[in-house]
Amino acid sequence: MSYKKPTEEEIKALQADVEAYMEKPVRENERRVRIGGTFEDNVKKMATSPPISNEKLKKWAKKQREDIEE
Image (cartoon, rainbow, N blue to C red; front, side, top):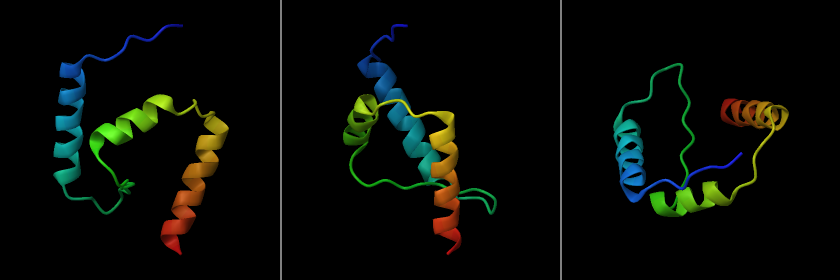
């Protein structure tokens, strides 16, 4: 399976979408994870991150919920 590298225009469009979404108020039933750093740094970090299994994702999400509720 091969992936095409996103173009600069696609990255700028995604950045605009993310920034617009982050400006919206958080609803009562919604949780958002805020990560520090610049958008470009976060994209680079995500691009080099290994894939995560569904099982690991479930464990991570459960831990996030528990941390927030404490």
